[in-house]
Length: 268
View 1: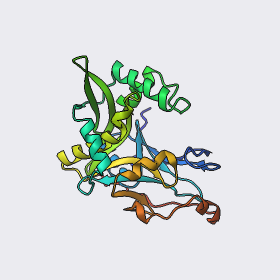
View 2: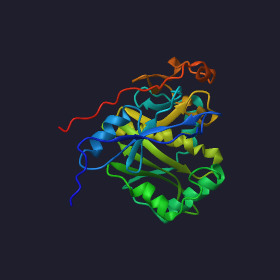
View 3: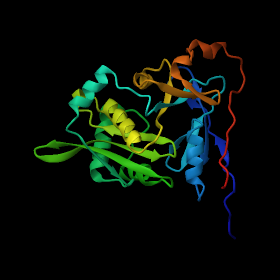
View 4: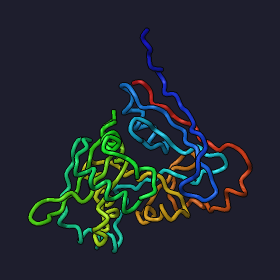
């Protein structure tokens, strides 16, 4: 018997689990699978509505009584590096960027494990093996790329950071980034975002999507250094400076389900 895939995407909600950003809160995610010829259009459409991709799944927060977790992006034309960010660019003038297909390599995995062990030893990715890593990089049916950064060491180029990105019709979505934690003086995390913004300009794309931002979360503070930062909240993109969220807001909200509509792309 042949099973046909549904024409329209099916959406599901995960079970509640501890929120990784706010204490004493739980999170739930709304998600749908990416499959078939409509995957690229669906990724484009839902990314503009606060969704993120993980392999062949698109998801966004769907938490009761909380909308603190917001998708964030910067305008490629509007962004101007600060004085400190310009100094970071000068420190990394020797770096060479390569744009490659989403294919995993041993050097990437070695750098990934070094990064995880140093920065997130107790995180959800700490037990990922080489096969898991390969799946994270290669399981994509949209336009994805690996942006690799190399610096010379003993006369040879050494991989010091990389990011998995999706190329959307209006921007670059940074899915996952890794850098060598030994090079603290280079501020590679900041450098990569600035360079992805330069890449977006080169490709004539409007935005760089940075993932989620939570005002008041120390894990997310670095994203507000990229101005102007836009966030998706209440079914629209607004400047992050207009968001007045504080942790106490959660306690004072009525017990009701929050949500925004989802707009699906046409088949044309």
